[in-house]
Length: 331
Image 1 (cartoon, rainbow, N blue to C red):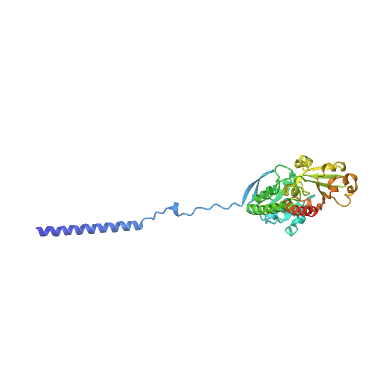
Image 2: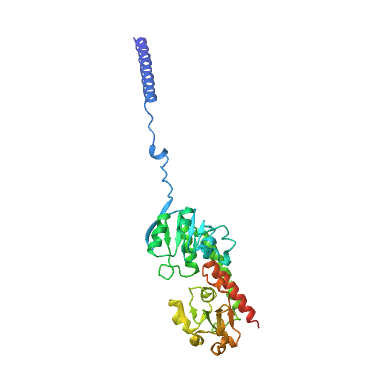
């Protein structure tokens, strides 16, 4: 009896063991056939957004959709600043192509017209993807904007760039060349600081400067943002304008004069622009009576080099004017 019960016990245990093994095998087989559960949130690659090729740029003519990275630019204005940032337009106004300070950089750029007007056929043929201009005339703007996205940054309004830093940063932002703009301005600031240092002890802060241009019987004077070296002497070199220039020209920027009032506008130092045929005034008693004339502190400059007042030209003019002042005022 005791012996039978012992055998029964072992048999029961063996049977249970077999049943357990079968159950495990069945479960294992079922799991192997079950669909795999995957964590899609952790293994699926995120869908990349398509890279934007255009963006919206606000202008005086409203918002304009422009290329993020324009390849075929026409620069009716701001050519020198664009070149300074390492970008070469396919077309530009002939007037700016002829700028003597960037002649080499502008080689190969097609002319799209002169100061009298834009050649729309030539603009169209160049197939631009961006046009940059200062023209606010509605008719011209409409024609240009039919050819390509057109950005208007006019002169003489609150929308214009005021000074070298604003212009370089503004064009840099427009073209996506912010890093190049900062690098150029850093170099510019370094050079201008060096030029100012050279003039210390040579030109006193109390010595004043003005600009006179002869048109024959009519004369003009200028402020700090209208060419003729104004940006170079007043802005870059920080030379002092005479009181009347400071009061009358820093907003209006230019004024027509008669010979009789020139002594009122001639400062201690005068930048003079005149050409043969329009320089008879130099023989007049009025001109000869001016202290700057008597003190040999009139600096005659070539008009074709000083019409321009873009950042590249301003730097070059500041270097030229500094050289003239040092030469003329050797101790």
